[in-house]
Amino acid sequence: MTRIALITGITGQDGAYLSRLLLEKGYRVHGVLARRSTDTLWRLRHLRVLDEVNLFDGDIMDLSSMIRIVEQSQAQEIYNLAAQSFVGTSWSQPLLTGMVTGIGAVNLLEAMRIVNPKARFYQASTSEMFGKIREPVQSETTPFYPRSPYGCAKLYAHWMTINHRESFGLHASSGILFNHESPLRGIEFVTRKVTDAAVRIKLGRQKQLKLGNIDVKRDWGYAGDFVQAMWLMLQQDQGDDYVVATGRSATVREMCHIAFERLGINYEDHVVVDPQLLRPAEVEALLGDPTKARQKLGWSATTTLEELIAMMVDADLRRVERE
Image 1 (cartoon, rainbow, N blue to C red):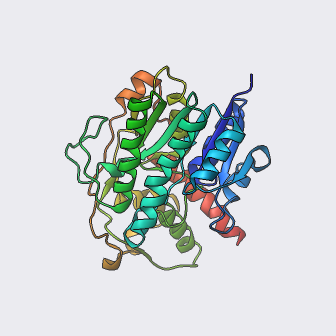
Image 2: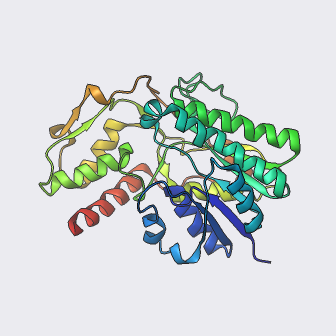
């Protein structure tokens, strides 16, 4: 029997890659389309899956629409990827971030509990919940200390997912995903900001790239790898929580070096640290321990940081040359 999946945040980077993965596995894929911004469908179009998914009009902040969509879709697997997901914006829009990223997840959990408690639920948690790290390598047992409104909102959604699992017996899992990027990443995120700027500088269309703290360290993986872990979580007998990471970290400075070197230029000649881009509270370093995901899910990252950045630079080069 054809399995049915419902994805909130289907128009985002992860939603697009997850849609493609599930369609390749023979799923019928439904998505929630919140009409709050312009051309949100370009990622699905880019992966050539737009015509293969069914989109419901709805908003994760509206419980009534979530109940309607869960009921009409009859999904056996529900993936909550919807969020106000840009950390920098969360300081200027903390209430919106709390509503969409935090309360929105609970709206979806409640809709599933009311309509279809036998379905399986995936919550997109984040390494930003670790924030001011309490351990040098972060695992599922590392204490949380979020350092942004985004991290705080995600932590509420994370614990409510656990609470619904333990209180109501739902099959609910959280993937604590570390940074994951791709050519489909929004231009506001530092990896795309770097690869796009490197290309424009190479082509003579830009001279400088302004960044904030370039010495922060992150564990960067490929979104196309990470959505496989999401799917694997919902194939387990019981819901659980998993760190999804590469186990390797690098600074933004190192990432700039890789991107600019791909184009034969020196990042030091073009990257400028702008104090206005520094965050009110910084997360200095994140490094995930994916041991549990490897042992229980059989998952591990297959794309290196160098391969990821090369993929993104090449994609941005094609984009900018078409402009």
